[in-house]
Length: 196
Image 1 (cartoon, helix red, strand yellow):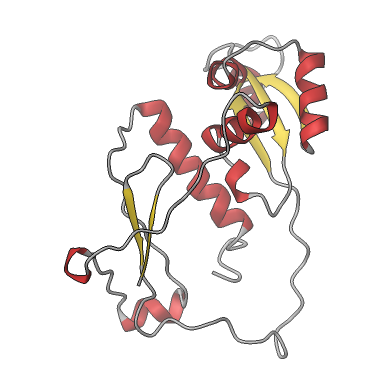
Image 2 (cartoon, helix red, strand yellow; image 1 turned 135 degrees about the horizontal axis):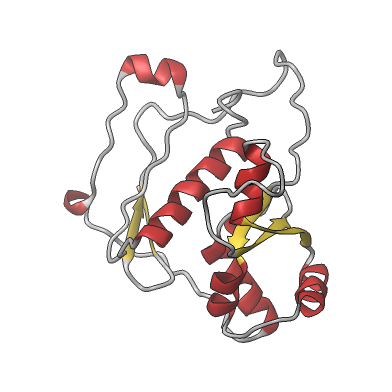
């Protein structure tokens, strides 16, 4: 078993599950297409609040460029809904006028797939937050939780990972961000179940 502390200092436990295995070599598998650059949609005002300052669009685009990501589109929730439902401009759509930034991030930066991870990385990049230091902790075996995977599940999901989150409060916005992150991980790492 592996154990660690999260950046907030609370313990996190990672365990190698019985029967877990290293992925087989890719000798007899079809080649996978390269990962597309994922796009993260975040509310501009919530992002700026998390960053601790307000940027003009040009300033934010420059920050993104310097960091190695790209502000791909600026839209609103209403415009997104209008586009999804194929509504004309003059037809009223549900949703609000919150400005949404669609930010393209590198396919191998899973930490940037949510507002919280993106904001933390940008704060560290700009020097407004120190780089977190994660420490390995020793957790007594009796305190560890176990996850049991049924044999029929392991046929569908040969690799399973779990985590226990403690000391986290989920308001609706944070919960939605967490679920969106889970979906982005599924789209990018698991490639919609093709490899996960």
